Amino acid sequence: MKWIGLPYEAKENEDVDYLYIVGGYHSVDSGTEVWGTTSYDKIRLIGDGMGAIVITYESGAVDKVPLIFGYTLWYYKPWKLYKAPFDGPGKDENMVSLLNEALHLYGAIEGREDCVLKVKLRGEKVISIEVEDNKEKAGSPVIKGAYIVSGEVNQLTGGIVSICTEEDFFKRYVIDSQNPYPDNVRKAIEEIRKRLYTFEEDYTKEPIPFEYEENYDGVKVRFYGNNIAKIANGVFYHNLKNLSERVDEDGLLHESSKNAPESFDSFGTWKHDAGTFYGRFYTRNRSFSVLAAFGYKELADRAVGYANRKMM
Image 1: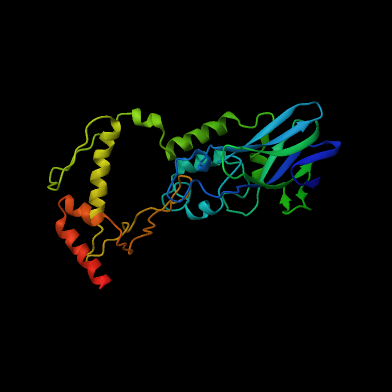
Image 2: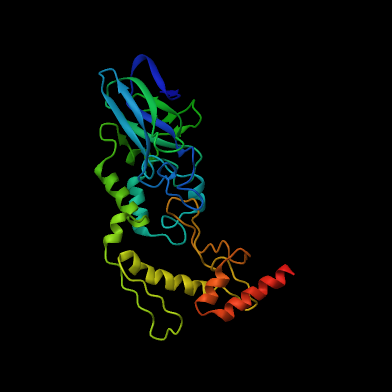
């Protein structure tokens, strides 16, 4: 057993049965930018590959263990802030099961500062181990080092963390370097992505038709055309309804509804019932004119009156 830094070159060809790799986060610790982005290099979602651990053997064989979010990488700060639908309020047991199938990073769910991957090697002499970065993505995987182990060792010490290899986690979650991205993990990752994210092909599916309630007597707006237009009908109605319900009796126009979720720079997860901007009011807000334009003049006047009083 020995603690090594990466990249590593063996001075003598070594028999290594297992690698215990310490790290598992990313130098850019977010799923995206705070207000979102369309730049591919700045997006880090579940299923996105950030590089690989490359193991080269004396025989010339090379194994690559992919560093993939949701499998061998995870999020530190975003996970502490935004856990739904995997944990806490808003938890979905199906999503929990999928994540349990996919995530092989010890300590990630608990939010530990240093996580661990256990990798079973192919039983040949190792000559080098290195971290390969995905150059198409900003930042790089954070790998702090590894223990190289021959045979069965119960306790790993001498590195930046001590590891008890007898924990049940390391019996269940072992990555085989010759089959580094097995089908069960791949399928779980794909299912998580389908449930968390929207893809181009989703817009080809016929959306649920939107109809106004029979007793609705407000302004009605209709969009016609493709599926995006059909989706916009319900989106517009619910957004306008939400806006009209954010004006208090005294005229305070809350920036968000009381139970609005929060996600910001997460990876598709959110904080349930956050109401982050509830109780806050911004004069730059264009909601006054939206309310007035779509039949809520009384609410708009009340909100403008509140703003004027606060600025006097």
